[in-house]
Structures are given as C-alpha cells and as structure tokens.
Length: 241
Image (cartoon, rainbow, N blue to C red; front, side, top):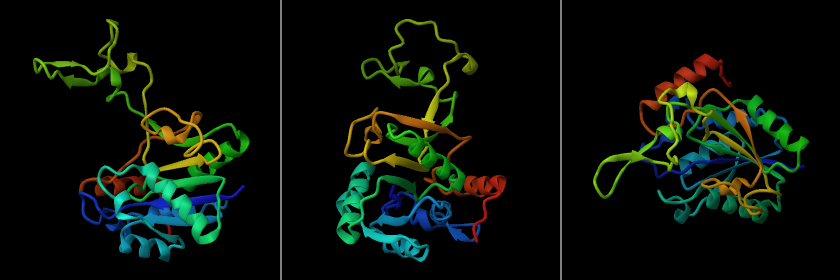
C-alpha cells in the first residue's frame, strides 16, 4: 500500500501565524510533522497551505509543497475540500495515488508516532475500515448536558430532544461520550473521502471509523493554548531533534 502524510494548515487564522509560533524552540507545526516523519510506514510527505511561511517550514522538514488556492483557505472553507485538492495535486505533480492518507493538522501538537503506527496497522488488518481516528472521552460536555437558548421566549432548553427521559445530572451516570480529535486522521482512501458517506459533520471519513482512544487533544486557537502545548510535550516526553 502507498501511504502518504498530508500536513494541513492555513495562514488565515484568528491567532496570527499560530502554526509557526515557537514552542520549546520549534514552530508549532514541527511536532505533528515530525511525528509522521518518524513513522516508517509512511512513504510520502506533502503539506497543503496558502502560507509561504508554512510551506517553507514544511519543506525544510521534508514535505512536498502543495499551494492551496485562496478559495479553500477562508473561515468557512471545509477541510475535505483541502484534502481532495491535495490528492489531485499529488497526482498532477508526481503521478502519486495513495491508498491511505494520514491527515495532520498543523495547529495540534498532541500526536505520537506510535498512535499513527497503530492507526495504520488497524487499517492494514481490516480493509473494510474507512478510517482510524483519535477520540477522547469528555463527560463534562456530554450532549445530554448541552443547552440552547430558545428563539421564542429566550429560555434555556435541552439541545437534544431527550424524549422525556429522566437524565441524571451526574456525569458518571451518563453513557460514555467521546469527541473526535483534530490532531490526525488516518483515512483509507478506497472507503473514504470520495467513496461512501459517514456520520456528519465528518462524513468524508466514511461509514466505518475505528476509534483510537487518547487522553486529550489540544487545538491551538488562543495564545494561552501554547502553554497547554508546553505542558503536554513535557508530560509525554516529546522532544524531536
């Protein structure tokens, strides 16, 4: 099988230049990039961005540049469109068609090479899987506890229709709740992206997504998130040199 890594990050962000902000002496995007570079199963490396700085940084780490058009770098742009554009560019530039694509998000350092390896091993063992993606448990933000503000009378209502069920206020009494991480996604391209729809909003992942349970995931959107990244790297002993 041909396995490619695709590092994705755009320059148009609320936190200016967040993907290249320094963390422990390296730009933020260095950590997901290096996690994949150290994975022996990956044989091709690409980076998709509209930012010359991001693309230059990625190129220095051994990633082939894919210049993403401005239309795919807007706040409302969908990740799947950037992925399909990148796949088209791999074919156009190199005649390369991967079987599996590891999508790396440049603003998340919570990635380990071992996690990528495990996801790829699972896909190889079960070709019917459309994707393997990390998830983390979060009972605090359980959908049964979520609320909305009623447009009619302005009162707080249950976000979901719970059908009159007696729902406990105790987190531990609720069904286990997992959220999909935005750190990396390993996609079987014969079952996902252009082939078969899965659960929204990540329907491009296809109909059979296997969860890789991790402790947490840190997306960088605010300056304070950089401190969480520093702490995570220290706690997990991540230091690529």
